[in-house]
Structure formats: C-alpha cells, structure tokens
Image (cartoon, rainbow, N blue to C red; front, side, top):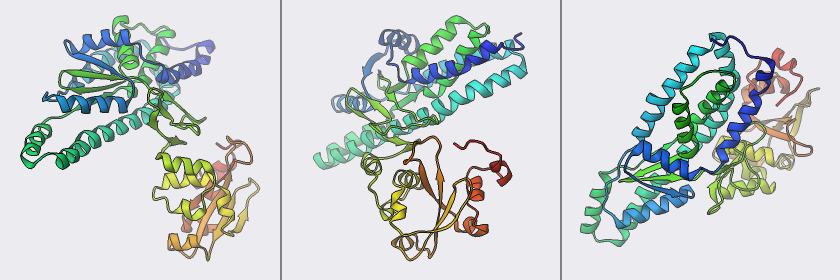
Length: 383
C-alpha cells in the first residue's frame, strides 16, 4: 500500500500533465494501430484516413459504390476500454494507494487532464464528428439523390440508407485516465502491464474510429492549439487542425467559431453594432474582447472606476440600445493579466439589475468570478 509520495514525485505532476496534453497531437503509430485494431475487431478491413473531412469523403465514395449495410462496432471498442481494461486498471490503482493519497493525486493530476482533454478536446471532436457525419451522410446525400434520381430509384436507395446506421468512437475522453495511470505507475503502483499497454495503444493510436460495414476507418490525430488556460485556441489557423488537407475547426479561448467570424474578430475592425448582432453570447463576448475599441466609438459614459482598475460603463441613445431594445446597456471593463498591453483590456455585458445594485465594478467582477466581494478583495492575482 502506497501511503505518501516524495517531494520529487510531487514535483513531477506538471511534467506528466504536459506529456499527455502534448500526446494529443502526436501522430498515431499506424503499425501499432493496425495490430491493436485487428486484436479488438478481428477480421475487419482497416483503413487509415488523414482527417475527418477525408474520412467523410471516403465514406461517401464507398456508399456510392456499395450496398453494404453500416455496422456498429463502437460497442466492441467501448466494451474493451471500459469493462475489460479501464475497470481492471482502476481497481489495481485504488487497491494500492492509500485513500487520502488517491484523492489528493486524483484532484491534482486527473482533474487537470480531464478538464483539458475530456471536457474540451474530446467533446468538441465528438460533436464536430457527429454533425459532419450526420449532415453529410444523411442530409447532403439525401438531397443530392433527391435532385438527381427519379422517385423510384430514390425510394429504393432511401429505404436502404435509412435502415442502416454508421457509428463512431472518439477516445480522447479516456486519455486523461491514461496520463493518470502513467503517473501512478511511476510512483510504484503495479498494473497488469499487458492490459495497460493495450489500453494506451487504443487511446493513443485509435483516437477517432468510424465504422461502416466491414470497414473500420481510423482517422489521424489533428494538431491541437491551446491557450494559457488550457482552452482550445489559435489565432493563426484552426485550433483543431489536420495538415493533410488544411481542414479543422476554429476556436478562440475555448469557443467554437466559424471561419468567417473568426477572421472578422481577429481583424479587430468590428464595430460595436456588428458585435452585438452576433447571436451566440460566448462568441459575442470573444468578439468584444478582441475589439475593445469598438466600445469607445459608442460614446459610453464611465459610471465608476475602482482602484483595481475595473470599470462600469453605460451606453444610452445609441444604435446599441436599439439592438438590445433597452434604454440602458451596461458593460464591465477589466484587465486580463494573461494578455499584454494594449490588448489586455476587455469588456463584457452586465445584467442591468446587477449593475444598478450599487454600481460597484469590483462587486460585478466578483459575481462574474463566482466569488463574494470579500473573497475577490483578497485576490492578489486575477486570471
């Protein structure tokens, strides 16, 4: 039973976090991937693809040439990872660590990896993959057939396609556990090495799998961009990026943004009216942060500025008020210490009820940070 860790072992935790975050972008080992896939799926056709777009295009081509029904092998992979490997490894881990140490390491190491790899990367890839496959393999294929084929041929094809299902499995959400097990092995926990190796091989070399008929498509990993807070982010290209075909998905500070809006935001030329017309609140906030000068052109009135540098602004008699359909629009101005001046001043919308409570920008910022005013006042650094 391991009851404590040394300072040297404690100091290694950030290294393991970085190691497993970085591994999210390391290309798969196709030789290992093929061997592992054959072990998991048996006698299936394994095809490697270079991006999600490449995978979808290949599937569309195969569907246009074949009448194969679409299988569902995702449950096989899920069963291997959870029922057989994950449960065994976790029980070995828990049985060898003193419960208090288990809790301590779990909160320090696993929670950080989980936040970045599972909550952001996995969930975003999973949803993007779902929307692409659904829209392109059903809606797009459906509409093309509808316009090109007569009703009899269309009805035959539609009846075949609608009675089948593609399936997919994205395993990034388990990479945090891989990092956790890796560290625990380093401090002396004994695992079944064969199971641990198989678990790692699946996670690292089969991160995105799509199943069609007797074919298993294994998609190459994308390169990943993160900001300092561990959110998906890039100001130069897609934050989730496949270099094979320059495809991917754009993010700023963890917010998924379509390419055209991403470009407009980064131009830092958006007017305040343009920003406020963005329907999505998160995207609107990002746009406001990247275009702080847009506010100044609306002749806002500074209500109060605190010693901490927080500001409460009021906009009246402006096009902004028409967009909001409100006579008064309040904004909180604050400094983001993770950014370099002059690009570190940001603004965000404030609920009028909160703003008019006492017009205190510090209390507003504390509320936005989910802190009491007393807790906020004790902060030395803000992030």
